[in-house]
Length: 435
Image 1 (cartoon, helix red, strand yellow):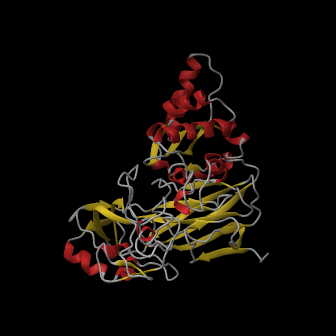
Image 2 (cartoon, rainbow, N blue to C red):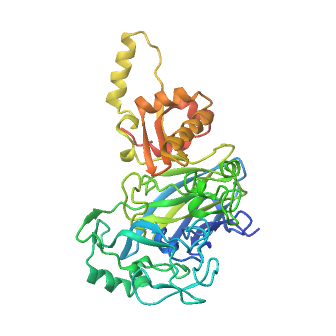
């Protein structure tokens, strides 16, 4: 194996498949830094059928010392949007242009080529053509879409008129600043303009961030909701429910709290972990209810640390304190004094010392995702699901990451629970400057 490096610059991408058999980048040292130039997610790959996963994520990185059964703590140091503009909106699959799943198995309706190469001819929703027979080939079109541009300070975005959208469409790669190695067709080529003059605050985050699954999976399907599309699918990436549950790592979360300052702790299911990222979003409210948001290119700086012997089924998020629900925020010194005084009145000798955690749950529906998150939290801390329900109810919250099936089960976890699971140091580091 190559000599591990302190800092790795990543500017290469998968074909949409996260395959544990493929060679990884790196290795990078435990505690090392990853700086990545990420490609836009969702819509660009969705209209580029040679990509087989619905996204275009970075090639995974091997982290020195990470073994199956460990975890990798990923500290997000910074996220910078580089796109000048992008386009997005609600989608409609086009029948006859895919085999079972339009995200994975795009097919030319005329010549029948599966995952064909494409060329761009003009602008608009018929501009993506099959390189073999020149047929209109896009597997998706907009039901309602917009083109949005961003200010230089990264504060706001504004949706544009037909004329401006078409100007951007003619120089799509320039305005989207897609990385040189990216093969996706720029979605601004479609020039959508149903919403004009809308202003949206920017708060960039990573829709895809995690570790490589232990079975080859399409990148956007590395989660319990989108992954359910693979069960019994007619293409080569079909899985059973048992296989999906065993192998997925839930790297596709679309949780807006996965942003600069947060720490994401991910399961290691293959040697080296295989840290990958992509699908940067300029902004999004809880739920990504339109199915898509403003996907952008950008520069991301991460630091990774191996946590030995932490057996996770899925990710655990330590959000920024300001992103925590009111009930889950670390107690202030004044609140602790009040609690101690109240406990003394009733003869209570000791109070729990706790810190917040967010356990990720995914599933085909939000109810299933909540059940999955509760079960994961209970298993992680070796307690009952009803206990986690109580803790999440009065010291936390259930928050939607992505509709239809990604949630965070957030609550204040007792210090002794965190110590037993070897998570206390990471949580204490995340919230050490609390009041």
